[in-house]
Length: 327
Ligand code: KG4
Ligand code: ZN
Image (cartoon, rainbow, N blue to C red; front, top):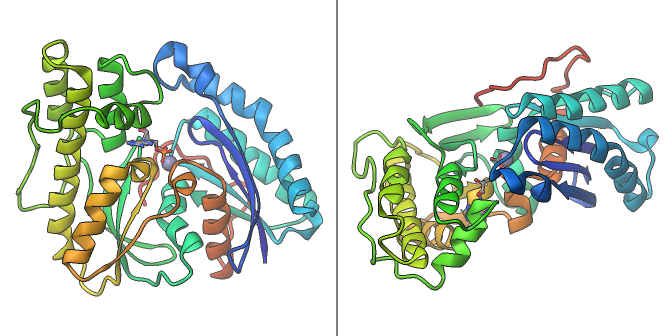
């Protein structure tokens, strides 16, 4: 089985080819950081236009890398949401056109499902059910992944996502865009105990997240402490919240074989390290995809497409692009 995957829901344009037995035959990605940097964040209209320019050449390059043509592909998988709607439409319409022209089935993939199933691409031994902490720029959720298309949401954020808090903190500290990696770098030379910062919802009975108060607290201390100390203290606060909330959710994730982390914030070493220790304490296997598979990419979309296609789940060509689409 060979699946072409397309991703364009935020600021990465990507195309990848993945087989049903987890071979990544091609993986092309074009970031748009330079285009958005002057604005300190992703500008939806600029993103959509950049996807239009980048996507077709990336698909052609991916097919060439894999040494295949569209005729060899079994299905075309494209992100159909959630995300910035202009970008989602570029990828989905392109996927529909290719599927129609080549007479192949279309798989409309939920971007979050792409993140949620991505650890199964890098780890062939990861079986359902598993407890997933999905932490990205737009989402912060704890899910019990019971099977393809079967996700039980145990917790979500009541305000901001963790990645959003990283991005805002980077902006407040003048560390540039994208924020997560910049905060992580600055934190390396800072003292995580230097700045007293709140841990919103710590020890509250429901495992939900909240980061708005932490972000506001960072805004209040900017200028009073060294940026490195603020970055390190902020990162420590986020890690404490993620660990506390995940611990809480573990009690509701009966039968889970592993603790899994996915999404852009899963690229953070402090986050990975703390979750790895937590899993060990609870006798669970810890699975984190390689860094390139944590942040947005098309391999995860192709893989989710492969899992859905294998389960007989394809979509009609009039399937809608969705700016919001809870798992
Ligand atoms: O999954 P992703 O690439 O896009 C979304 O679907 O949102 O996640 C992007 C988010 C951004 O907020 C980015 O700042 C954050 O992931 N991120 C990180 C790191 N790398 C990316 N946050 C903390 N530490 C990192 N190393
Ligand atoms: Zn994402």
